[in-house]
Figure (cartoon, rainbow, N blue to C red):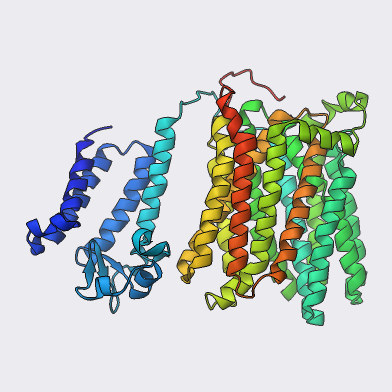
Length: 568
């Protein structure tokens, strides 16, 4: 790094003008010195612009500098945001300034780049931060990670390198089409039932029954998934699900709500095998050095299709009716089946091995989970945190209505979580060491707990959406790591079954979380605090079962340095 003394020079300037030493400098010189400190930092970052983390931090510093210059040399903050951070209005109202902040009145320039995110952490720690501050923290976190982690040199370390493998690309396309069908079905049926009956109880019954079907489907399929070629299983399931959707058409046109709901649950029962089968198949299609990147792409498309499926489903059912939505749904299952049938690498190569292996019982799969502390820790911690997310989803509409006065903002809240998921999943694809990935699980769950505590305490919509985004980003990092660690630790003969069984356990945790929401206070904030405590419990479990073992194990790379690295 070049010219590091400039950082300490900028710090010295701000310590003088923003502490009790400020009386040593004439008041009219404070603003020019404040801007000068930013100028010194700009020079430092310009000299070190090749560093990725510092480049991101420079972007944040530049946005802060722009809004400060546009508002007379200080960062604007509203009186409401100042009070919501836990500070008293009297501390800034008298002179209109407090350190580098100025009380925004009227129409401040570029207000959205100012301090708009109050963190309600009390009068001592509480603060209001800006978009630039967030970019600075994010950039410095990347800098510290890259500076403190030994690089793993690999011939293929690109996040998008798995797309060079045709079978993996076809798997990604097929799974995306299938997920789109899942969300189309759920959104269309929920919208149709409620618009026809105006009974929320029927919608709740359908969603609960569909989730229970997913649990039972995973448990039923767990012993069978590793006996046949995975791609052929996926293709056959999509064909059957398409036929089930076709059978729903005449019933929907005749307004038979219960049969339609039951057939949708049957489709969910069959679809419970696709997620674990896909996650298991990734390990058959990619070299070992690309597993984490492949899982990151798989997770990113999963989140993107979630948003797209919900939007398309609502649009189609409102314009073309339930019949149009179901016909589109059939086409997605047909497309998924087509892509799966064209996967050749991961199916036949292990047919003989699976045929010779004994069919594992559900009890045997449970023993495999209990025997491996990493697999057990992942299963237990994810189940607890999944229950927390179920509680959050159920309590979020109440919280938005009662605490933030935004009864119609649930879609925006889910959008913030979904955007965070996609960012977190993509970022995890850049992790190259297994010890970093293991530690990240507990840290991510702890981060989710902190964000939930702040969200429960805030009355600022901006801060609430920011916390929901960060919750999604933290959750996204764990999903990718979960898949990669399972693939690396489990043999191919039981991998699919363990994936299916643990997915059912976690879905059961989601049901528990959803069931707890009505029992809590109507404000929604207590539910968010309980979710935070559950996430912290998940963090402790992950740290003890996954991260703690690192002290006795030599760290292994997620990315192999050997060009001959092949699929496990």
